[in-house]
Image (cartoon, one colour):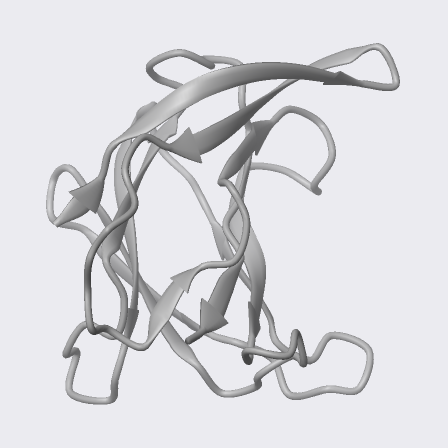
Length: 140
C-alpha cells in the first residue's frame, strides 16, 4: 500500500524545492516508517537518484538494510544501506530512463515488506523538474 503524498512548496538558497508530506499516517505494524517527509528536489545530488538514510529509533544509522525500488512497469532495483564509517546507513538508487512513478519499500531477505510502499513521482506529477528524491527511514 502506497502512502498518499501532497506537495508543500518550500525554497532553499533561492532554488525552488518541494517537500512532500504524508496526507495520512499509515497504521501499520511494519518495523520501518518514514523518518521525515519525502523531499523532491533538483540539483542537490549527483544526477537522478532516490536516496536517503536508514536509522534506528534514536537516530543512529543502520547498515545492511535492504530496500526495493519498483517502477510502474515492474522493473526492480535493490540497494542496501552502507556500512562504512563515513556513509553508514545511507543508500542510493540511480534512476535512468523516462519520467515515471516509482515505489520504494524496505524489505527483508525474502522480499517481505518491512515498511509501507512510498510512491515517488520521478519527473512527473507536481514537481516534474525533480531529479533527487530524498526518503529517510526509521526503525520503530
